[in-house]
Image (cartoon, rainbow, N blue to C red):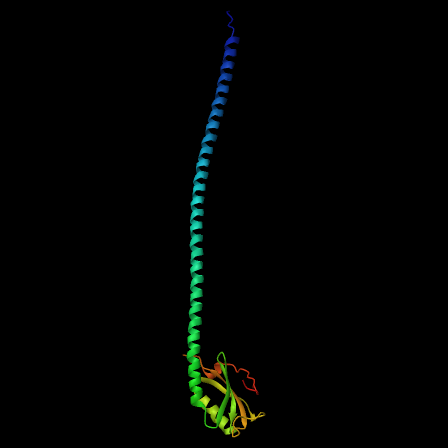
Length: 204
């Protein structure tokens, strides 16, 4: 019976398998490197795109901040202009009110009453003067009460003058306080608090 030596063939088969295995490892490594490169490229593109979006957003935010600052400056300018407008209107109203106050004061003074001082502090006014009698003071107070310009006229002081009056026929000194009704105001008398007044015996 003939004998066949299979050792060389088996050795050749083993070497072929090793070669194929190494080739497979090499191909796998190459594919892995290519895959990592592609993944890195995709991520780089996404990062670049996101950075571009961030830059765009930052530019828009900066533009909005400039607009907001401009709006704030305009609001401040508007507030200053409105403040000046109110000051001018208040001055004009105060001048008109002073003229009307003097006019009404002249119309409301009865005979037998002489005013010494008229003091205005804001919307409060104080009259001091001399009178022939208490009745004349009461008449003056009633005259103020019927005047639409005044609110809550109140007699603060009436007494025999401690100092000599300019007119001997007017021996009484008095003090009347009242509030001035604001222009275009419908508020009633109860809407105002009483204010304190002090009598200046020496006069101005």
